[in-house]
Amino acid sequence: MASLARFRPAVRRIPAFARAIQTSADTTQLQDIIEDQSKPFTVKLHEESFRAYQCETPSLEVEVKKDELLKMYKDMQTMRRMEMAADALYKAKLIRGFCHLAIGQEAVSVGLEYGIKPEDRVITAYRCHPFAVMRGGTIKGVIAELLGRQAGMSHGKGGSMHIFTPSFFGGNGIVGAQVPVGAGIAFAQKYLGKNTATFALYGDGASNQGQVFEAFNMAKLWGLPAVFVCENNKYGMGTSAERSSSNTEYFTRGDKIPGLQVNGMDIIASRHAVQYARKWVTEGNGPLLMEFVTYRYGGHSMSDPGTTYRTREEVQRMRSTQDPIRGLQRYIEEWGLATEQELKQLDKDAKAEVDQAVEEAKQSPEPLAKDLWTDIYYKGTEPSSMRGREREEVHHY
Image (cartoon, rainbow, N blue to C red; front, side, top):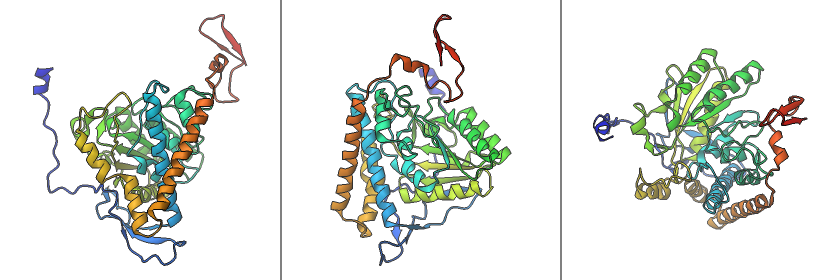
């Protein structure tokens, strides 16, 4: 291994003068004097909130509403509380197996949901819990699934990486495999004549998978309404992006597919970029690549302490200076939309909601042996019988 290390190529460095994406969570500026809080008002994003490849960047001026900002704040707090609860349950050995948390990346999942329509389609990898809830699931359903209980969204048989709703196609455990599936979902939507967008998310660690590039090619060839979204949280498992990818500007890796890099720590920028992407693909422009530059505070999974390949100081610096929830909190307070006490009440409400969901999930029973025969086929398409482990073991529906 020592001899191999000597031949490791030098890390590709971006020149100091190269323009970089802004990843601060609180650089958006108020443009209007808010005279009536019930009406929309205009804010201006930082000039380096976006970078584009073969397309124009979205406008920096964004129209927002007080109620929507408060809802996004509450949703981000709730998603973080849910993931923190999962962390505690895992450490208590009530959750077993794989478990990947998205603490720090809330502006992506919540921002995505606020930028799309209910009929749009979303598919992602294994860091999926917030997407499942935002796409119509429940906190109780997610926690119960992690605990392996009947009340789980997959009836306790899917676990952390396999959670679904009618418009959310998982939760997928194979690295990068959801990307071609996402292209297939987009193909189906186009074939059925539906004017919807499909968002297929993957991480920087999956970006070098061959099937990802194959999906890009087919999507461009067929003009599919697919947005391929790279959640670049800087580390694929324990490997930094610079050590695994010769080109870390993931939004440029679609060849003939245009791309957009986004500040994934500012939820206003995230939501605005998603709206831009949805408009792009539903207006017949073909697929689009989108890269959210974000950060995870924890390890890759619960088995990874997350401090062997980065310093504790780095993590603490990101938490204290670029946290997406604290950034939105600052906007709301500085723009006079809510007081600190009102936001603290939203925090308490989020905690109470998650705590109640956890207790209810714990009360749910584990699946029964007979449940092994169910949910194998889509309901209504089951065969008349199913063979078990041995030829003589047959279940009749």
